[in-house]
Image (cartoon, rainbow, N blue to C red; front, side, top):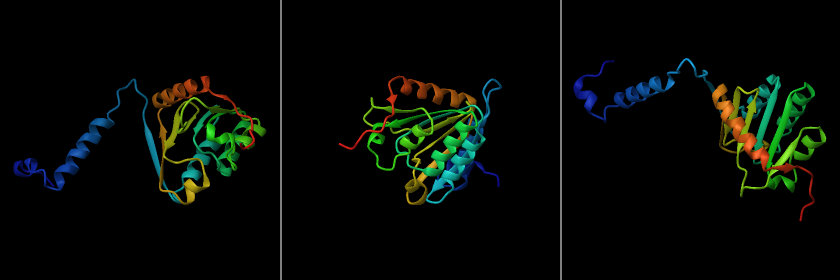
Length: 189
C-alpha cells in the first residue's frame, strides 16, 4: 500500500502511524560498526516462561553471573545459580534488605551453597531485578525472581544480548556492591 500526499498529512489515517513507527524502528535499529549488536527476547507472566528463560540463560553461563534482586524466593532460579557456581561460574548476588527477614528467601540457600550473597541496605528499596551473564547478556524487567511473579502476577522480562549494555549494568552492579554488606541470616524482630 502506498500513501498519497493526502493520506500522509492526515494523522487519522491508520496506515500513517504504522508507517511512522516502522520508520522510527528502522532508524533506531541502525547500529554503528563499533557498537555491539542487540538481540532482545521478551516474556510475560503469568505462566509466560519467564522463570524457564532465566534458568536457560543461567544454564548457559560460562564465566560470570551478577544478580540484583528485590525479592528472591524462586527455587528453580536459586538452583540454577548454584549449579552455575558448581560449574565454576563466578556468581554473586545483591539483595534488598527485606531479605534479612523474608521467610522464604533464597538468600540463606544461596549463602549455604557458597554463592557470595550481599544486602544493599543503603536504599529505601533495592528494587532492581537484573542479571548480567558473561558480560554480554542482561536479564531485566518487572519480573521478581519469585514463584508468584511466574504464576500469578502480570510481569515482563527482557533477555537482552548486548555487550555495551551489559557493561553498563555490570558497572551499576559494582557500585551497589561497594555499599552492600555480606548476607547473614537474621532472626525476625
